[in-house]
Length: 58
Image (cartoon, rainbow, N blue to C red; front, side, top):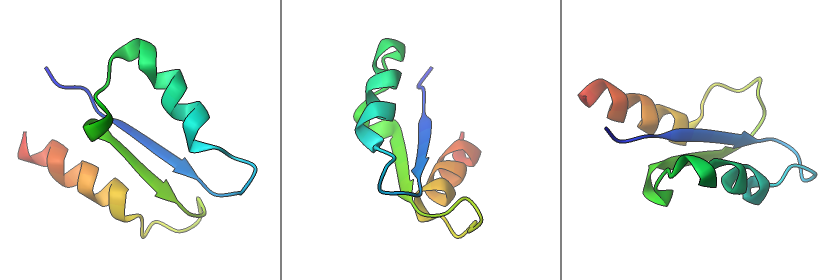
C-alpha cells in the first residue's frame, strides 16, 4: 500500500524541509509528498487537490 503526505506552509518562518524530515521515518516516497505554500484560510490549494484526486482514483 502506498503512503501519501500533505504539507502546507504559510509563513516564511515555516520550513517545508523540517516537515519532510519528520516524514522520513514513515518511508513516504518524495513523489508522494504534496506541498502547498499558502494561507490556511485559502482552500484553493493545487497540491491538496491533486492529492485528493489521486486518493479518489484508488
